[in-house]
Length: 120
Image 1 (cartoon, rainbow, N blue to C red):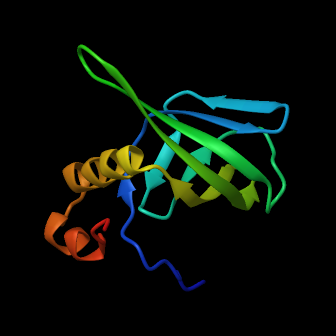
Image 2 (cartoon, helix red, strand yellow):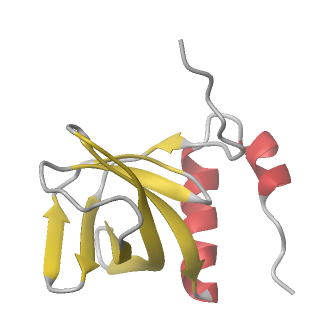
């Protein structure tokens, strides 16, 4: 059994994700499986090589609005189930939306709150 080396809490969250890398665009309908402050896993049968830089739009829709969390990332894992993407950077608004999404969906929000660093 392999040991997990994640240092951030992941929460189960399914939503539409759009990934762009160069001329390639991957849209995965409701197939993100989990997300953290540092990255996410997206189920897709399309392939991007490890270390490929990409733009990720995590699309959120409510009853009256649509919102997206936009991040710069890179592929850190690729397998037959999908892509593991680490987040390299995101703007302040996207950070707050991601933080709130995680806190709302976490099993233990108090533990997750300790991982979140305030933005100066």
